[in-house]
Amino acid sequence: MDRELAARRLPDAAVTALGRWWAENAATYTDATPGAHTIRYTPSRWARITPWPSALARPWGKGKRGTAGGSGPVTLERILAADSLDTALALAVTTLGEHGSRQAYAALHQRIPGLGPSFFTKFLYFAGAALPAVRGPRPLVLDRVLSLRMRSLAAAVGRETGHDPDGSVAAWVWADWNWSPHRYEVYLSFMHAATRQLTSTGTWPPDAGPDLLECALFKAGWK
Image (cartoon, rainbow, N blue to C red; front, top):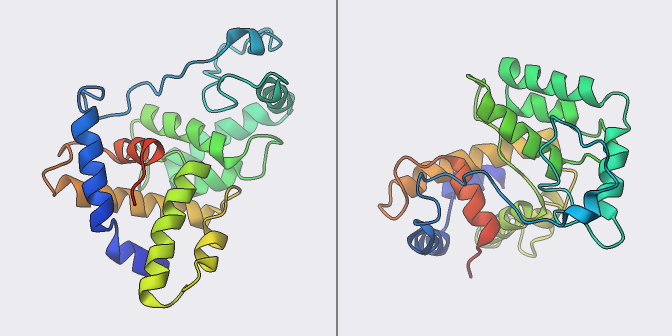
């Protein structure tokens, strides 16, 4: 089914919806990138993290505002308490530059308690943007929302081909979390190919990278 999805890429409905999204948001993303990925958050809910790690640009992506019960800060404390955190992050960056995104993902997968793929792929995304060169496609964020978009696409392909008539296979391979390194590689391959598809339509900025598509899929869907 991965091969079928790769061959078909984005369906017409998705291309139309994404073109509409760009027409409505072009003024927001003037350089055809997601920009700084800025968010709003509630500082008081993160006050327990002291001193704040100087190299840590967070809480973006980890609880955002932080819940009233403090689940975001609690998870962050757990991550920062891991003795192997610095070593694991440094290894991932080195691996990203020398071997590529899949291997860097594998280097962090299930390594640090509390630091799941939804959040460490954000680290990989920014690391990839900072490195002068990365072997293969540069990393993108993969979280539950993006996985649900991929599940929807895969389920449609499964119905059309008869390989997955009830969508159960799509729901299994595009689960809500803990995606395998192979699944991350499939995601990156699709996103880079789909970006090339979109830039050829005339309704998408011709110089846009895959991170703009990632941003659009996160913020908007289609029927």
